[in-house]
Picture (cartoon, rainbow, N blue to C red):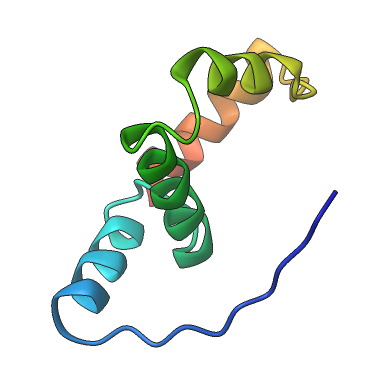
Length: 80
């Protein structure tokens, strides 16, 4: 697997949007938001097909979460 590390500076609108995405809970971190935006861009410009993307999602190991743990996690989110 190839890995790349970047240092990015965002100002103005881009910085505001990135912070809002995290603040609203759409993403857990700014890095996660940027990675998702990159994948969406690749699909939009047809470097990656939706079918290929879904295939990769389905191959990814699933997180084993019991119904009880899910209720606990949702309750802690609602309480905050």
